[in-house]
Length: 480
Image (cartoon, rainbow, N blue to C red; front, side, top):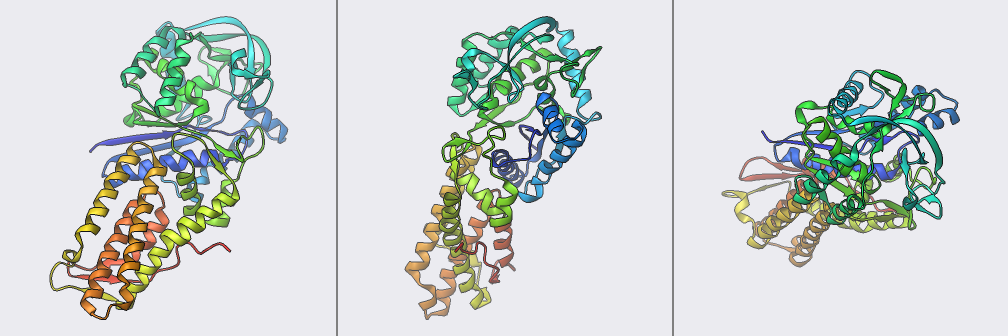
């Protein structure tokens, strides 16, 4: 059986989840569900990144110990599973001393064995938001472009990793496609970054400065730095490594497409196959950020509009390879236009007409009533949707499914089954509409699992001759 291992980035727990992480989780969930439906052995990993000075500061501000604080926030990220109907197989926490710490210590020792760790005094600009040292060229008007904060000047003795030793090797692997960075713009971005020249990177902080983390093996005076710690979470399900897909946001491209492959090459571990980089969700054009404080709570959205509605908006409105904007107005327009008037209305029309007949029976195989143009439209859409999911173009896949819903609506309007007097002719057109809906239900299953399940329960294929239809509930009641 073919395996498929997909990861999200692990969410940083300095604040509760916002819809930026919800987007990534839902995108990964679509891919996982799609590959499961293909009969593959899927492992979907997510989790939380819980060490670092930003977490320690947030805990102090909240009047909690780092452990109390991370337990509380991590629980909220785990709760996204139910709220967003996610199908992840495991949730890793970097504070897990039994499952995560041994991998970090193992990979650190491999760096040592490869001669890739050394100690030196370093002075530089440190962005707490990124948990990373930055350079002047990363700043805009003296501030971090992503977090709108001025970096701190820090001078300290740290362990360094020989990133410069591996930069060209990593670039060649990206250029050759051994590590596939998607989309092309992000591939070009990381290759351009490497070509500008790469220096070695700090992989530890003094424990007097950063006590909340994993101690350097053999040197308790130093704490392993966040990226050397966090990225190693992906090795947790050893039997599934290498990852088929790392799904990440564009702000952590450098860490996943340069640091992580370099670490793996140094440690003699296989490389991930693909890195899919999604854009940001903006709010009225401004990047959503916990640091800036303009975030949207996914739990509140789900409570008001329902899980599938939230999944649909994020997958449909946010372009897979770029940024997309969130406003309540856009959300409600998508809900009423695409869900209530689109999928919901088509489903209700077909199931209402079908349930009036109760059972539909044919002399032979009922599927022989399927028209050529209906069957061709279904096959064409199924092929397009599969291709788009494989390319992570989720918004385009949904657009293709909604085009098929539009085709179904036009068929209802043209044929007017309610006005057909001949019983057999009425049954024939209804079978075409029901098969169409049944296939739409299967296609939306990775995207809108609840709606798909409700539709499927209303269509009962008793045998090749007999079909029973139940009316079912309203999928997406219109918003007033």
